[in-house]
Length: 377
Image 1 (cartoon, rainbow, N blue to C red):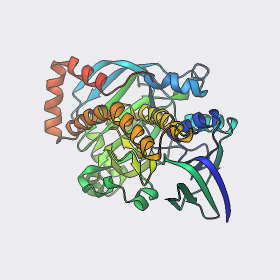
Image 2: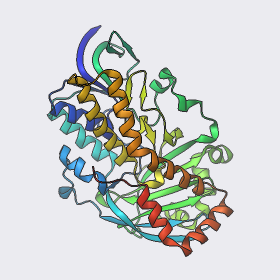
Image 3: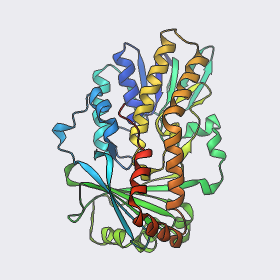
Image 4: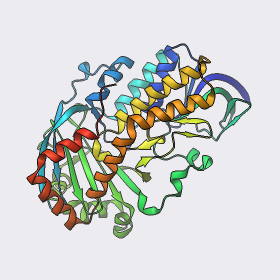
């Protein structure tokens, strides 16, 4: 087996992993990144980018102006029966598919000198003798630091025996994503439509397309015996969603799906491996904040890792530094979003009643929306 040594090994090539790789390589560090897929590829994601993270992405080299992306500044919410609430988005944002964004970051990372192994699955990672040993089917690598950026759910989670996996089944969800066309969709707004046991978000992305993604409690899928039956018999109880399923043009033949989703902070360090992006914690997708938190966690981890690689702190001090900054930046936002998520997943009758209340006091909705967003970083 070939053996090679790096300053940082990153497991996962989504927005968090690629952003960290670019930052480290620009600072002269030798970086190796593993991605099991081949670029470009689709991912389950809301694909809404809050304006708080636009300056950071532009600093990495993403050119938003040339891509003619939508300006999104409004929010439309609806209950399972179709009771609707409209309010402005205090920060606003835009939309760009992960197919495009991840591929653009991939190209920037290659130009910056990051060594990237695509279509490569990490079989094992182990910390010993002050180094991380990473094994694939054909090679073994060594690194001074290691970062997990492998997303919401991965085989390495099982290997590391991470605590969140012990949560009861009621804590987990399934998610699905489509790209669609719909002439009647207002591309200046994000739409969030509740249905019994879940909710669906729609937002504009590039090329006149719309991202349509939803989460649902697992029992909906089990009850209906399949994803399309669930969409027909449960999601379509909401008149807004029924209209999209009946009149929208679906680009994907079938949705991208992911299961065993957990919303909340997991653990920021596991077996001395720094966790970033969805590997560290998932904010409920109704916040429209997942990518921003992933990107900012990459920036925070970069700051901590550089202290360690430049021999200014010990390994334990690096881990504590990152954990402290992560919790200070995200714990309140993730907790608030989780509480709102619970309200959205009440039985339909209670959710409808909640919407009647919030319709009388729309400022509450706007205030909560503001609290689950952060500052520009």
